[in-house]
Amino acid sequence: MKRVLVTGGSGWIGRHVAAQLLEKGFDVHATYRNTVIPHPPQVCHWHRVDLLDEAEVTSLIRQVQPTHLIHLAWEAVPPQCYHSITNYHWVHASMALIRRFVEHGGTDIVVAGSCAEYEWENGYLDEQRTPLSVQTPYALCKNTLHTWLQSYAEHVGLRVCWARIFHLYGPHESGKRFISSMITSLLKKEEVLCTHGRQSRDFLYIEDVASALVCLVMSKLDGAVNVGSGRPVPLRLIASIIQAQMGSRELIHWGAIPLPADEPLFVGASIERLQKEAYWKPGYTLQAGLTETIAWWRQHVKD
Amino acid sequence: MKRVLVTGGSGWIGRHVAAQLLEKGFDVHATYRNTVIPHPPQVCHWHRVDLLDEAEVTSLIRQVQPTHLIHLAWEAVPPQCYHSITNYHWVHASMALIRRFVEHGGTDIVVAGSCAEYEWENGYLDEQRTPLSVQTPYALCKNTLHTWLQSYAEHVGLRVCWARIFHLYGPHESGKRFISSMITSLLKKEEVLCTHGRQSRDFLYIEDVASALVCLVMSKLDGAVNVGSGRPVPLRLIASIIQAQMGSRELIHWGAIPLPADEPLFVGASIERLQKEAYWKPGYTLQAGLTETIAWWRQHVKD
Image 1 (spheres, each protein chain N blue to C red):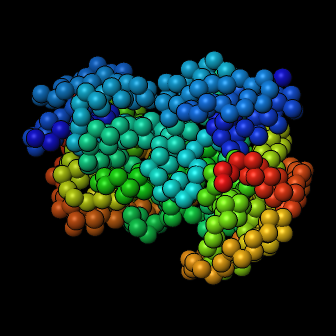
Image 2: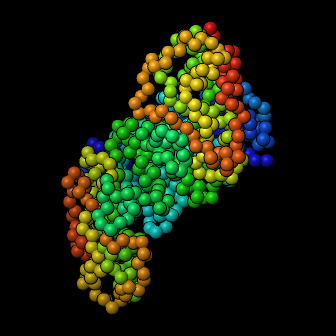
Image 3: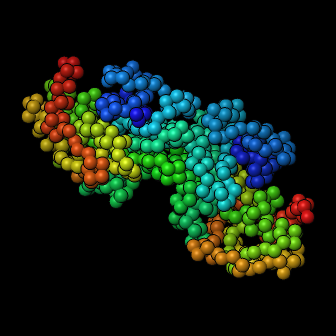
């Protein structure tokens, strides 16, 4: 049985990844730091570890000896994550983790990156063609780690898949991103101030993000692979689906806040690799994912 | 008094750097690993540390609390250093060291890189203009660390000077590079097989390399700074100076081994920054440096 270690296992993506890996028959070990584990899916081995502490990491890897690693842990809640000092710390902590993993026999790694590693431009962002960004500490640090890791992997014969996750949504979101903030505002009957809303973005339901990562860890792919729907939609279309299920059209004020001048109008994920090389398919349409998300928020928003 | 930590303090460059810093009035702490310290210059504080062990590094920095850091330690003996796995380890170990240094109040860093970080081309290699290489693990890892460090330094308000050291020579060299191997072969009356020898390279005497690094740590400069003579000379000219002092012309066979096709004929260091911004001047001419080196080898080569 393959033994997989999921860092950030109690996080938004991590809990779904751990659950799906268990269903696939992996021996799943997952790390968490501060939180009490919210709902241990089934028989997952939980490890409370500060991954920024090299001694704790060394002892974890020695104990678990995973063959596979899904490295999700990082400071990852926007917008503060883009400029946080901890980005710099996560670079060397991740290198140390990966080195220990390799030294104890690990062979396959999936690392979570994101679309924020690219220089954004109008169109479909592509793993090979789109230039990478060094504009924010987040982008610079993720790209620095990726450069080091790709070369290290070749040197030691490690398989590395670097997943660039685009926009995601679903239950348990922190509530400040577009979809969650719209749903929660409508539930609370609060006004929603929006940009013009004509910009298209690529959204994927959280469980589909997790299934893509699980698909990648089970594949033989290496290199960067975008994780997205491949079907960017205008924010206004997303809002109209939410409104159709929730009503309250009059609370949404389009054009109330400006879209930053440097934000392109159309950003999509080129997902050829994910579809044609990893054979991944999503389980949810946008409509179905939004239905799940609205249902979850109805249970969790206090009036 | 400024407290400076020199990593690799017992190394070829490090011992000269430590000695010169003491002369300038620094409180000097230096690390070494395996070797017994060969000749502690004066009252330098020696610390035996494995810099690849984060716990040892943390304890070192907590104890010394240096304001200045000259980071020389790395796997640095060509040619094996260019492809060694330890390059990858030195990246995260250096990041951890620098992070601890900053957390304990450190403000100024000089890191030793080299001309092997550049894509070699015919001409003077320039800090701003010459493209950087990712061809060897050494180049990729040094450039990865540099990218991370430059951004981290801006973020935390650290001054970083990245010294790209060109070719160097002098006493205590490992004996396999051009100048040392020529001198030792002539001393032993052995045949010397050479390339055609018309390629020009930029050589600097070891004490001048050290004085440049000391100059940089005392300056207010930041960014990459080449450390070289700025006066590349053909290898045949170097050989003729050595021969004039040692005789044995008939032992040298030019054209006996091929120069790799991708090696440019003329590689020099553009040293405008070092001269005009750091006001550094060399103490040795090529002639004088070679005289010192020959004299040292006469003492140390067993017939």
